Amino acid sequence: MNSNELAPSTPLLWTGRILSGLVIAFLVFDGAIKLAPIQPVTDSLLELGFTPTDALARGLGILLIACTLLYAIPRTSLLGAILVTGYLGGAIAIQVRVGNPLFTHILFSFYLGAFMWAGLLIRNRQARYALFSEQRQT
Image 1: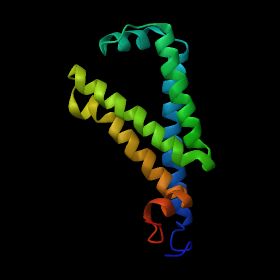
Image 2: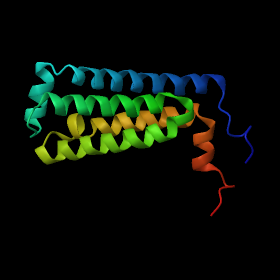
Image 3: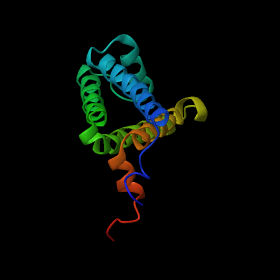
Image 4: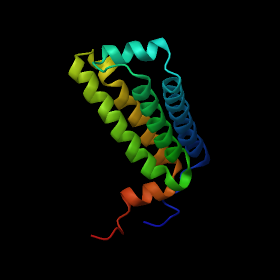
């Protein structure tokens, strides 16, 4: 498989960029509201079983923004996607632990992760090559 076979068409490339952009915008917003812990952030931490401290909220916000920025930068987007996937996996585990509804709460992070990976694989040739190339070394 050569690199031309891995190149998406222009509309498909823009689809990947738009998917990635929407995910990035949501994750940056989610991280930013944790930096200045407002009442809904504090309330949600309490509902999820955490002691709602400003340090915890800010730490989660900084972590999420840092991982999202790695995802947004083309050179580090694969690393960022892996790190955001870990963050989202933790979110799923917490939602399961507190017994929240499946499709609206538990799987929301899964949906977000699926959009993130779809956007990455469509827009990033190196990520597609790393994951789907038959020429990988074993």
